[in-house]
Length: 440
Image 1 (cartoon, helix red, strand yellow):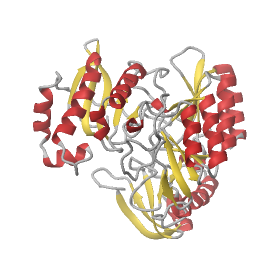
Image 2 (image 1 turned 90 degrees about the vertical axis):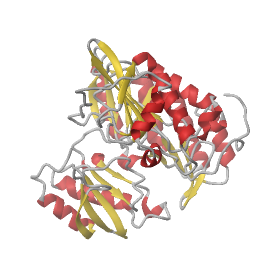
Image 3 (image 1 turned 45 degrees about the vertical axis):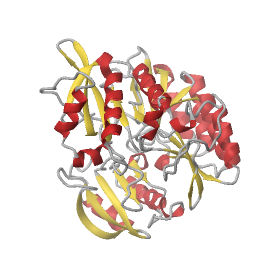
Image 4 (image 1 turned 180 degrees about the horizontal axis):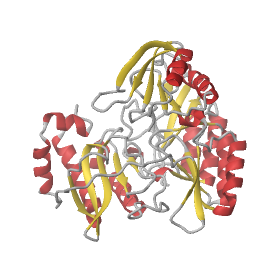
């Protein structure tokens, strides 16, 4: 890591980064962006140490497969230096904001993968960090690269997405703008042209967008898609895609042990309750990765983690020890299927203690033998979920929520079902509907 001033080249933004610590009710927040969600055991231990030495000890897994340290006090520079020394920083200070590239957590090990996305991802990330023009992108501008894996988050919208498919014996990359891989693709390129496509789209976006148009959806609200594509065709060659749609995963693959493409090996997925770890959890998981895996952890867009490359014969022991650390490895555990933002205990915009209420709801749902996917949001910003959950509880006051169900064609959280419910009333209503296929 090259030495550089910690504050130089940083622009004002409400988004935390490794070099930009932003304030919250419970202290500063530092966001550590992980390439493909991957962190080595040694780096995980450095994060745990920094969180305990310089902050409250709270570590969050984010919905874009990154990590956050919360409750940072006055020793911000010391925390940043420790993380930089562990190799967790960008190539340059100005490059930190633009490292927004999502991969499947099982890239390179997934049995359904059409190609290993990691080399192309490394090339993309190097380009956006090295070229100053791309540093003008918003800290929220994001790209997804999907290799066709069985384990892939397909519901988070991105400014540009690329998804692998096979046609006539050739692997190609379908792509789309301001959406998800399950949308109808805009076009496709040869696999070897994936990097050129990303560069062309980003350059064209920056050339066409005015300062207020920070995301692709903002630009396309004023510029017809056909016009954007016509100009894109002058920069990179692409073809239309007919009769192809990305399949959605049919089961919960980020929790528990699942077979890898590599014979006799599995990855083991574990959920920190409500996406939050402490130093002991992270250190313990890092130790297990060294003992039973390849000394890496992979964080996921479901605010969980994977231990990859575990031998089949060791899977039960790894699950047992993860459970002993307080991590959830069974999709039948209600708490493993709930997500909640920081809530009023740490965020000034939160109207309720979402994490406390989520634990209460999970305990009630567990007694009914239910484990639906529920999202508790302290305000309409929906910080904990980039996608629309099957069930959303939107806080309206302490301990009270409006209840939404996801419904095709309905914007935002979906269809409003009931207002101003207590957690007990939410539990009773969901229990009454338990025979209906609410969950996905």
